[in-house]
Image (cartoon, rainbow, N blue to C red; front, side, top):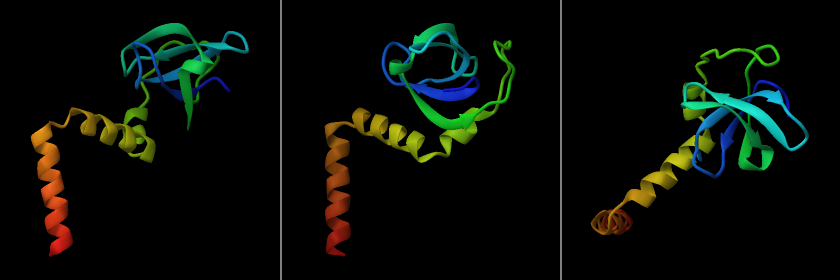
Length: 109
């Protein structure tokens, strides 16, 4: 874990939001900030977040700086899987039926 590492909050009220690690408090917690995702600077345990491969370059305990990480994040497979999971959860019964019919017709064609 290093300062500048981008993480995705895995559970809690801010689940699914991107945050950047600003300062490492101890071995279990870090100060995180997510100005683009409206997550205020706060201490968060490492078990509540999943680290990504993105690293932002800024000094230790720096002030907020907007980086265009959300577009890079949207193009990753991880983000597309999360988006597909959310889309599937919001689908209605009739929409599931239409998908089933479309798949069945494509197999027969």
